[in-house]
Amino acid sequence: MAIVEVKVPQLSESVAEATMLTWKKKAGEAVAIDEILIEIETDKVVLEVPAPSAGVLAEIVVGDGGTVVSDQVIAKIDSEGKGVAAAPAAAAAAAAPAVAAAAAPAAGGSKGDVVMPAAAKLMADNALAAGSVAGTGRDGRVTKGDVLGALEGGAKAAPAPVAAPVAVPQSAAVARPLPAVAAPIGQNLGERPEQRVPMSRLRARVAERLLQSQATNAILTTFNEVNMAPVMEMRKKFQEKFEKEHGVKLGFMSFFVKAAVAALKKYPVLNASVDGNDIVYHGYFDIGIAVGSPRGLVVPIIRNADQMSFADIEKKIAEFGQKAKDGKLSMDDLSGGTFSISNGGVFGSMLSTPIINPPQSAILGVHATKDRAMVENGQVVVRPINYLAMSYDHRIIDGREAVLGLVTMKEALEDPARLLFDI
Image (cartoon, rainbow, N blue to C red; front, side, top):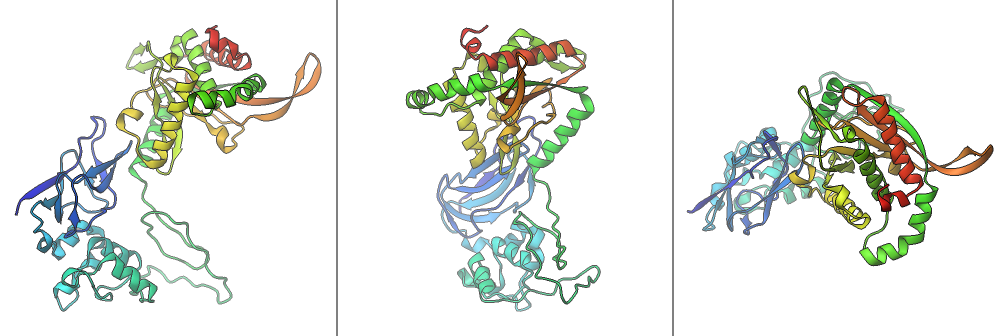
């Protein structure tokens, strides 16, 4: 038997550990070289772990939900394809320690009592008693398909211990289902069900950084309103030609990025960061764009935004959006950044006070553009108005620079020709 070890990829220096998600293969199954075996979640990205060799997955060393570090061995592959026998109950238990009770063999102790990791987890989630599902896999092993079939056939759940009885009125309506979330923990208590769901590593890291930001920065927010009519007219005029020429739609975000860069050039402290008792002024403009993803908030970085065209920026934003949706953002995509933009307007936000993304010192909040009554030359007129909010670290940025920086963005957006001539 030639054993090849499957190891955790090298993690970033800022990432100490990662969390195993769900194995795509079971012990004893054949794998092809470079086939994705499992995904590993760090506090920044999700990494795919491919099979380093073809063969049979002989052993799963670290199961779903386990915590791992760089280069740790998480599985073993028999490259000669003789690892089927190496998937006993012990391997199943190693692959799913949280559901060991469900994976344990019944009293008979035959090979047919061995429950595969995914099947054991599914049995535990549905409170099925060990031995209640007949196995159809190799040597009678219980597979995920066996459990699904049993559930469809009406298999009964094992009695679950209840900490305290809860009385449900006879006249109560059918309990509302809980939302579909990962790894639910809890009980259905009639009409008032609850679930306790552990934070993902990304969510926990975001929470930690937000608290860190509020605890270490002297955050203040300044506001201004922008008449978006000139940008909207320019966009409408060139949208069709722009898309035909560059293969991407002309959105509003490229205008906000360009306006932000114009302000950062004029007031460099907005593009600076604090390092101990020093102020670090950055001679480059790496703009973070806050993006919502199925895993939570991520902020990929548009590097050297000052050197990019409108088309380059729009293409990069579209690329980041797709990567975030697919969970394919890399460490490099999320590292660094000197200033951030958060666009709550896509969700309908009228106004907000964004939180600074450390170690940056300022962030621009963009909101929904709505028709509002404005006074121009003594007359009430209707204009498409967007409220901008810029939060900044008052330790190094004075109100003057913050306000004038936001005014610079306003002026650039209300006269977008300035962005073309860099004035």
